[in-house]
Amino acid sequence: MPVSVEPWAKDRIWDAFDRGAWVPPGGTRIETEHYLLAITPGSTPLTYVYRFRAEPPERFGAVFDEVQARVQERGGTGARIQVTPRSRPPDLGHRLVTRGFTPLAESDLMARELAPASPGSNARPLVSPEGVEVREVRTDDDYRAYGRVVDDVFHEPPPSPEVEAEFFQMFRRARDAGEPTGLFLARAEGVPAGIGGSHRVGPVLFLTGGGVAESHRHRGVYRALVAARLEAAQPTGAEIALTIARRATSGPILERLGFRRVGPVRLYEGSF
Image (tube, rainbow, N blue to C red; front, side):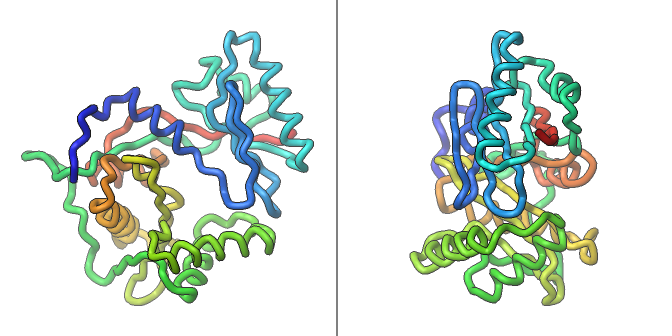
């Protein structure tokens, strides 16, 4: 793997994270100097708000009102606003709480450079435990099994049939073109047990949507999903993997796998 001339310092990682915000198929992307909206289609009337930056602080009210108006005019009723050390004003989280938003689980942006572990590293080898198999989703049957595990893990309202059809066609187009689908399915003793997604933006691999069915937790399935996605990215030229991890659950696992904490990332959810 070619080694980047530029080191992966914290500012560069945050720059890459900002560029990697993902808008789902069929979604609406609205980007200004103050925010990026990813308006989610289907039955979940939520918008994800990235890169919220209102400076000076007195502009917060005007920017928030603009976000609300743009969401509502497209039929949305609420939002999840992402708060990072780069968000502005610096007390954005507190201001959102005063507007009725609720903070979700404490999480961190975590990073792992995709190079062999240095001598003396305490990172666990990235191998799957016995009885757990992970493979990229390449068949219609695996795609359906992936969807069932997603429902089991996240308990989110399903997208509309039109949006689900677009997701399925996107998967088929990538598969039929011989491209990565970005979907990984774990089986434990042959039973679908966990899922994970990934996509690459330049030299950065983003790990997304990882989760394990409740019936198969504490058996190394999450670790196997991370290992498989990193291994698949090695030949592509990816230099670093980034992911958001909850401090109480996946964060400690990722630290044992050689990831480091870059800084806090927290979602605030509320209605308009």
